[in-house]
Structure formats: structure tokens, C-alpha cells
Length: 116
Ligand SMILES: [Zn+2]
Ligand SMILES: [Zn+2]
Image (cartoon, rainbow, N blue to C red):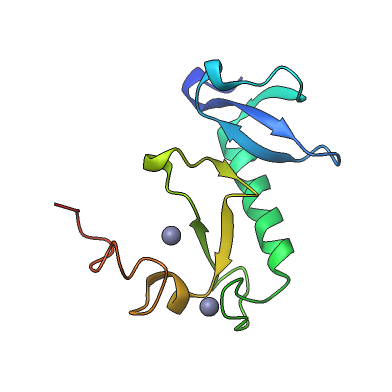
């Protein structure tokens, strides 16, 4: 049995894999197939599908990436209402993610350090 805090509501894609995690019970749409699932399993399902979609290339610059080098980026940050989902995920090379010209360069000039 998964403990309650590690369970999430998950939307499933047509192949039965998790494609979106809902943060709040109140956000759940009535029309989609939603199940309660282990958070860990849902997150890894979503990550896998983002990497599969990238097909070995950074989704920003097309440099080669693999499961060891790729970074999973959230296009819309969670703090701004973004969700953990295949649609909101992007597989990026480290340069595009954390580099000087990367996606976080504007808003997180010192990524990894606490924001003021
Ligand atoms: Zn890149
Ligand atoms: Zn990111």
C-alpha cells in the first residue's frame, strides 16, 4: 500500500500510461479517465514519454541527448500553475536547460541557488 502522501490523481493516455498529474482534487475534470496512483510511478511514466518524444534529440536545439544526459524541464513552472505532464515537459540538453543561453538564463541566472 502506497502511503497517502505519495498518491496522486493521474490522467491516463490511450495506452494506459500516466500523462498528467493533478495537484488538487478540485481540479479533476469529469470527462477524463482519472485514477489514483503512486506519484513515483506517474512521474517516471511521464518522464519516459517526454524522453521518447524527444527521440534522442534536445527538444530545443536538437543536440543528441540520452537518458543520462537529458534534463527534464517544465515549460510552465509549477509555481505558475504548471503541471507535471507530458505536454508541460521538455527534454533538454544541459546547455539548453542550465547554460548561459538556456531556458532558465533570464529568470534563474544562478540556477540552484535560492531566489531572493
Ligand atoms: Zn539543447
Ligand atoms: Zn527547467
